Length: 274
Image 1 (cartoon, helix red, strand yellow):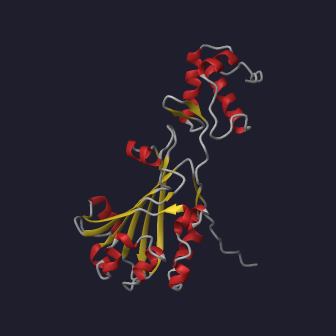
Image 2: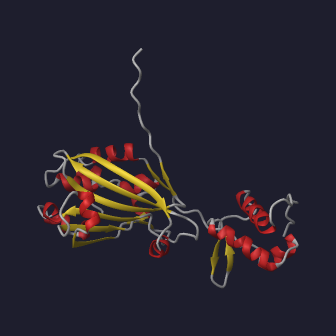
């Protein structure tokens, strides 16, 4: 193994070594999927105690630069499919797509739109159930607590990966969805044209969508489901869809993994009059 370059001694050894390993990973000396040298090898290379290496590597794990594989050492993770959400363009694309003929609606969906992957690279597991609105959901939807809702869990996954792209929980007023029995059937997912087309089958047109996003540490369940390295946050997105008669017709909570999600917003401003 090549010797690491000399580093300024102003930083504590743990931080100095972690920063150097991070730099070497970014430079491609340790490529995605490759195993880092053993703790003993790194300790010898940096002329420090193995405990110092252990703590330096722990900093990299917290930042997601390396991951442990039980009994196999420490590895640089393979890059995961990136997610780019551009709500302004995406929501208008969804609405326009809802009016296309079936053959065109079947060609692509939001999973493909967000990842740039083709449909045959993705799986679309979905699970539907009838639930009562919790106080928090009822407040967001402007309905009474306990109101019947159709809850839909979506876990779209790139087939070559094990972790879903996101954790989506969608709620539609049950009486509204029940106007078309097909909307209650999870076996019909992925629905060509998505939620906007589904709602159009019960004479609902979306007027506007309000997004509210924040980052936070993941719960243990979310960390396991999304296979997040220690230290990576999630982006919690609350999405509320209003119909043209100003009713909330769908509310979604979307949990996005912080290591592969970019949110991009473009706000077009009115020009000053000359």
